[in-house]
Length: 311
Image 1 (tube, rainbow, N blue to C red):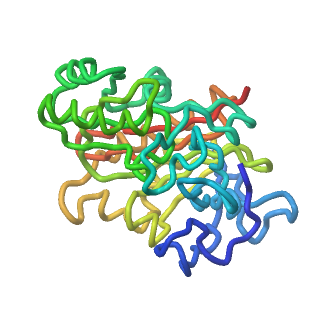
Image 2 (spheres, rainbow, N blue to C red; image 1 turned 90 degrees about the horizontal axis):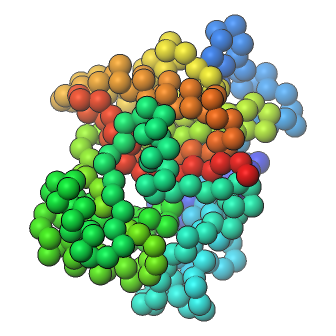
């Protein structure tokens, strides 16, 4: 992926991104051992820094639906299958299964395969089934339990592509939604998933060339898009690191119950530790985006995941 050296403005594009100032360099990115830490002012020059890692994780430019000049690091993720397809107003498919940029660096893992990998590692994920046709989608919805969500399986930015249908309560709604999404993704299975509830959060991992794997955590929505409220640690982390990553967020009062029900903080610590342990055990995992993760008083559930694994 492209590593930007400096961005005076948020490069995500669109009205919300223009003129949006970034948060300053995190105060420090900490190793799992308390005696080993790097502070922003002490980073060796020319060897990368946590701000660049942060940029790569959370300020990646978005590519227009039709591609073209100025595409960001995701270029190739949704290459149109024929000229004109994928542009606004075009009725053709919007996505393909490949991601050329990511595949050049490693294997891109999406959808149920990514969630199954996380589940096998002991992490909690939303129940997700695959469906190749309307009949399978209805059968999966009945097995999962209504209401359900139906999603594309071969795209990273499903919502931006119009590739998500939420709150489907009846078989007919599932059939209609399947037909709509099948026009965006003509081949391969679609994902049928139980609905998630709670605060939306994300967990990210990126392998920095100088510091190694970096773990990031934050809440979704305004907390990231406007306040850029993020916490970072170098992997591996311990339970104290996980607790500090949670408590140092400006959004911590929302987690601890200041505005209603508090989330299960012990389970959230377990999520951060579990991701750290997974990356430590499987260093071939180069990148990981778990987004959204639903947090509640009953624990956490991972809704969607994107993983890049070394060849």
